[in-house]
Image (tube, rainbow, N blue to C red; front, side, top):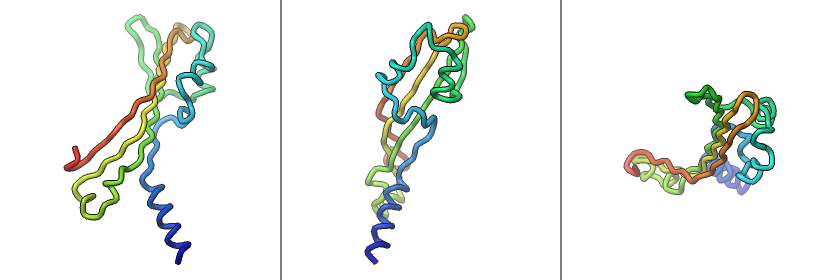
Length: 126
């Protein structure tokens, strides 16, 4: 019985965690990205090798290519587990990481890595 209870608690804990986006950003920080990307030196193929394909590609008016990588790592807040209360809405919080890389030809011209807190709410908790 004790093993079943432990399995249920672990299952409920893991069920409230969601991670979407580029998983290669999971362990990255501004400092770690700075050690990997050098403006004017790092190439497109090196960035693709390190982080995979971008989630979004866009272009500036001058024709420079911009790659965007994103990762959202959230877990359900305690209110989502309260019986009856969770019928009226839910809440989740976590972090969002974003890496934006602008290329001048084949080389990185500029890049930016950011991490911020995020929160989503549904139903009456909006």
